[in-house]
Image (tube, rainbow over all chains, first blue to last red; front, side, top):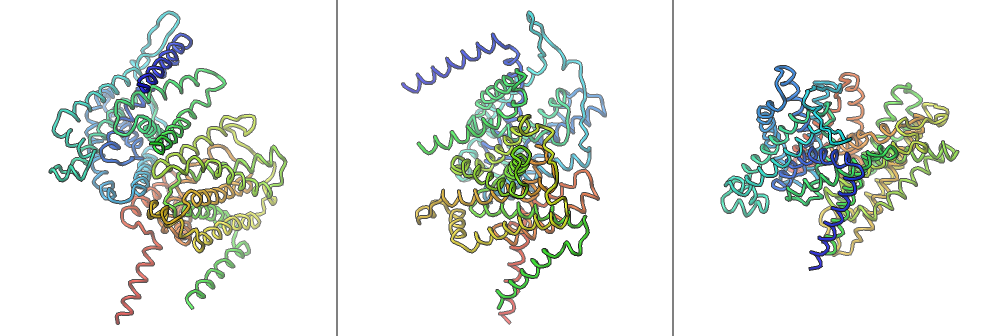
Length: 307
Length: 313
């Protein structure tokens, strides 16, 4: 009962805050939602790996970077639209993720968690540096007309293109939900995520499932990488901030809670853009996320102590 | 008998290290300083790792030390040498305060939080324009000891020796038993009466002090710093790779790793200006996969195998 009332109070407060921001600075909400879509759609594949394989892949952002460069090469060479390139790039990154899993991560599944963390850290560094070697640190950008599409409502004019990220995030959530609850492979993956030993006893091939989940998550990141280059310029270190952000969002939502990632992203996106809206605090926008991550982690640890 | 040989070897190496400005030129001394800085950071990272806590925030405390020292000289008019002591103490106090919160965390949550703290320090320094100089950073009126390369070398060596001494003390005292017990099994350590939080806090404060001190020495030796150089991710990455390659949970391992990788990276920097850091990434991967004990661990195993083979004859 008390819980329900608390939840109602929180919901009312959030609605009031959103309404206040909407009236006062509508762009905060619009930009916030747009960045939330981007954050969520990048974080969801990492959440999938963390939820099922139980590995924090610190090279997640680098997978995005690899996909972005692959798309860039493909589109620059053939003049293809990045949205069309999604399918081939996803196939390439799926294979790439699978190979990385087989060669490295699979060997470290049994070792202590910290070794896995350092291992994926090493993979991240290696991928960034390979990109550095191949492409140097010069930024690259492809421009497309449709990216600058905008809408005017009264005095307010804003870009609508980036809402595509929210759409992708929602599609990912729905697709994964269907996959994990309706298909045999998905159900098996869910079972492995809950209890690998139990899953192995009832005859699920755990190793194959891990490989598959890794490939699937890499394919999703690959698709995001393809879309990513439409709105951002790319350079070798472009992915690394997203690793931390994704991890933070997953930790906020709770491991295994994929729809919750979108909620956490909205909170992060809106608060960042709230600070960006003022001249005095613009430089501090980056700090929101790091403060948020520490608050969330500490909050969870204190809550865990009490329970 | 064996103990005596290793003491003599250590004394000889120390004597050579102290005397080297007499026969080395300015460039090798500069390389030596950077190797020693990374070595001290690698050892300090390893000291905390002995308790099973892996920090990704070395650069954070290093940068904090740099700024504390530079700002103490610039804004407080402190003596440069004194400012190094001040910066080390400042990093230690910060670690003490932060430790109460973050040392409750374990495994990846601790690691990620240290990384996030480092970013927070960097953003704060980036944005406090009036106080810290903002993105442009700070320039000191003069380099410590008038930039005399021998003096700078000895200063850095002094910092390194303090770190080695602390690490050696950690290895030989009760700290070693406590930290190893926490690493192996926290529950059984607690039930045997080890005050886990106390030992973690000591280790965290001591290692942070070392990292802050090295940061202060760095900034006083170069005379300037910016948020991006003080909180450079390389100050986390390189020491980590060095300690892993050499062999963790020891003093000698990170030292060996730092000498090898430090000199190799100087050479590689000239060969491959873009992307020479790939060597570090690949080394981390290979060591974790194939050689979790590092070079020192491998050497120990080979010596033991050799001795057993000898005894068998």
